[in-house]
Amino acid sequence: MDGIRVVVNGQPRDCSSASPHTSLLDWLRAEGLTGAKEGCAEGECGACAVLVARPDGPDHSRWTSLNSCLPAALAFDGQEIITAEGLGTVSVPGAAREDLHPVQQEMADRGGSQCGYCTPGFICSMAAEYYRPDRNPAREGAQAHSQQETGTEAVGEEHATDHECGPNGFDLHALSGNLCRCTGYRPIRDAAYALGTPPGTDPLLERQNRQAPAAKHTRADDGAGFLRPGTLAEALRLLQENPEARLVAGATDLGVEVNLRHSRPPLVLAIDRLEELRTLKFDAGHVEIGAALTLSEAERGLRGRVPLLGQLFPQFASRLIRNAATFGGNLSTGSPIGDSAPVLLALDARVVLASTGGEREVPLSEYYTGYRQSVRKPGELLSAVRIPLPLAENAAFYKIAKRRFDDISSVSAAIALQVTDGTVASARIGLGGVAATPIRATATEEALVGRPWTADTAAAAGPVMAGEGTPIDDMRASALYRSAMLRQALLKFHAEHAPVEVA
Image (cartoon, rainbow, N blue to C red; front, side):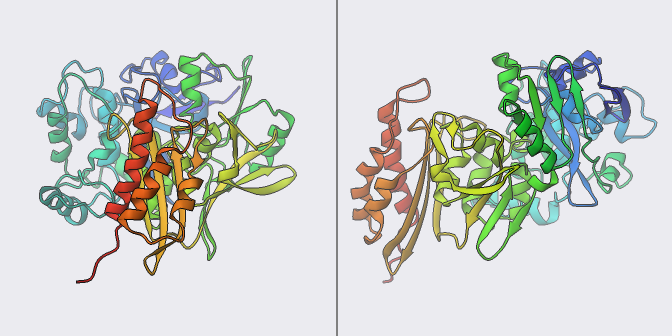
């Protein structure tokens, strides 16, 4: 465990004493940096947010906000982190300890902090948006502000489905994972919309013009093991030798198990920085998304070229979570209410399973075998998701939850239809929250294909959709409500994608 160090607020700190299950938050607080707080310990409140320098292309980096309560401190070996305490001093050379960063100053001036518990997390999420490379007030923000007032949607490279950008280009979705119960959100929004452009001499801005730190080959053993292999081949070999090892990318699921269920896996293999798993490829037959590419990175890379995924991204948890979570992790977890599986089922996606013996490709519709169980064998890992091309022309994702953003779905439905000459030529429907696994609504698909795409067809298929799966009563919704929402989703889809009648 020698030589495990993390650069925090510009200064290297020894992290060798941290156990494999010590979260970044707990380690930072033990180091005396107590600005970040534990609120929920599961990535929902954002009180623990910090900034991390992450890759943004081959030659640049991007300050990325993350929940520090979920990932292990050892996962940041060799990485650069900024906490709320360091923002002012690091961004202004020679600044005194009490000097404020522009984000902090605006929050103070506009009354954005009351009890202060959540404020450091807000500050870090706001700072990530403040330094966002493509935040362009003239092109994106002013246009979005105008469209917000007229009720239309803002159009931007990364924010095509967002419509809450201010005149300075600040996207309020950057704060979707930060919750406040004291001040209220208006003064926080006012502070966000008052931020200008970082000065060219700002060291944190200049830092983005250099590469992010490379992932280090980390090995730690303190009764439990933490290994970060350097290559995919090494990771597969280690997994073959240790089939009980837990694979971790963003830790958005494992971190919750460690914090709330006191899970202590004997061996953790960190695969989040393996370049072989961080690819995004387009060819004539499919789109391939690497299993370790974060959802935010996939969103930026796709640039809206898979519209159904474009609808998914803003509704998948929060920006803080999407900055860490991956398709590989979300699918491998196997939760029946995971948001990505229904969308990928509607896209007829396939998953690539890799092992020391080679690769095999499995339709996602055949991947799950039971509650959190799959066809993945010991020694295999999910390395990529492949989406066949061309895409269906009509597609939508409906997520029913108590909150619009940053919430767990009660039921979800993704629908992709190809309509040719007024007839449904193909249908793919993925459902979540109505069975022990995400499922394809095959009976509903059969009720649609070959029939005219009319209101009568949708109405006839609605009861079939309502009968898909085996919904249950639980704290989020009743079985009857879930069934009703399935039927309604199909009717809503037809209303939004009805054929245009020519007078």
